[in-house]
Image 1: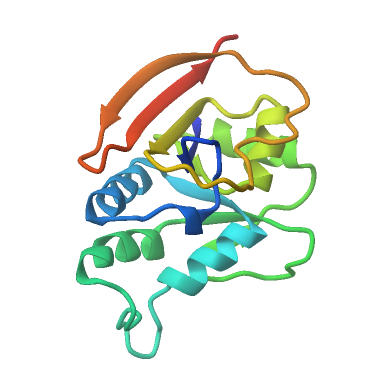
Image 2: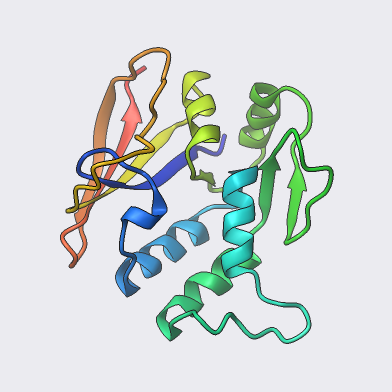
Length: 186
């Protein structure tokens, strides 16, 4: 069974709004390695559309966006090439190496986890909250940034029951951000 890892950048006060965090070359490199670890990415509609808009390589030119720094390109190429599954009740089709998951979310994700491979990676806010509530996340990875945002959205806000976690990995990035990976205590 391949594990499902939830990875998210978060501030010290629990904000997981991507605009509240400054992403540098090291963070992009780390995120690219995380994507390479996974067999596929699992996104909700909002995260899928945000990532596609930012990092999809245009088919016509193959050239990345003008706003992108050169050190972002390896991450962009990695996420562009990755297999993606999208959970959405409003989208009727997707591309960008993606397919829609249909039917019951718990059953669909359980089937993905049963397939052979290294693992699945998810991010975002709403979909991981639903997956956590269903007990489907095997690893929680919080990249905690030394920043206080003073606003939300807050990490896993609205979780219907507490989840006890066990620290299994930690690393510090040069920015002072801490990578903390946990597994649920079962």
